[in-house]
Length: 477
Image (cartoon, rainbow, N blue to C red; front, side, top):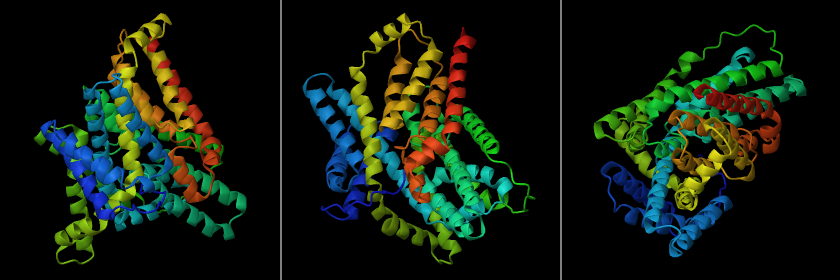
């Protein structure tokens, strides 16, 4: 998620506060539904979201958001009126849409706070100032860490800084070396960023997977996700080392750990706060984090204002949240609509799939759990190349596989399969937001960045994942 990159014309109805107010009502309705298990919140939430946000913002949405929203509305109406789905399914689809809109809205608050933080820019400068021998590793970790706080905004920030740094060095460096530096630094950042869906509680991937696997919590999944992310980062480092000869220069004593500790502490604080709130209020970890974000943003801004010499930092922080952050929330219009519609369309389409018949056909083919997960992995991966992102494909797949008769999938294995495919597909597909935004930041075509520069790493990683999934069949057999 990033601030809307389409820069579309403003809504003709009302100003930014209308959209902000509608999103806040939507978020509040979703939060009440989650906290109190209320069944009536879809009414105010749905009205606010559709009539207070989507319709007024319609002209300002990117084409993909408009198309997906229109498809979702047509499917919901036509399938309900023809009796192919029940009103209860439509109700659950709307609840899912409101929850995802709540998710994006709260992350928008966190992202805007992070984007204005001197801590983030200082951390970016530290990451980019590393000597060649250490630059790839630090950029990979930095892209991952900043992606937690800024989401796709990290790619814009670091990508622009990389492009500017390489451009400034071209006058004193031969063109070939400058191009290699741009490529290596960009891939390090992108590969690190793309591992965020594997482990971060602030990634949209987490609620999609954990909602489908109710017996699995973020605390259960996180150690495995972090392990897979570490393996992918190590593979990326190895591919980089094999692709380019390491320069024979002494490593400068440039500090990097200590300046990044405040950002690391902040990243660790988010799930820690969520864990406490989850235990106290008996909520899902992801929901606990979301309802904690306004407090986190207020405290973070208060610290910033205190550092700037404000005599009333809390009041100044609250004022900046109301007058600066809230009016910007409609800038996330396309992301909000895409995520909400994706969540809803998965719920709407699931009843159309005859899971029992599908299970019988797969069993007749003699496929085991490992082969089925490989097929799922490839489906998520390949659909990204035709513009159907993991939000939709993972939602559908996670709605089918856990309920497939005759199969006994290990929940952790299912989750890691989906999240790994998500991670790898968004790092290579020219249609993925991560590749497009990074390519725009460094002035390189998305196809060049994803399919040429990152191909060896992604294909190697995918082959290793497929091999592990197939071996899981042998291990269980």
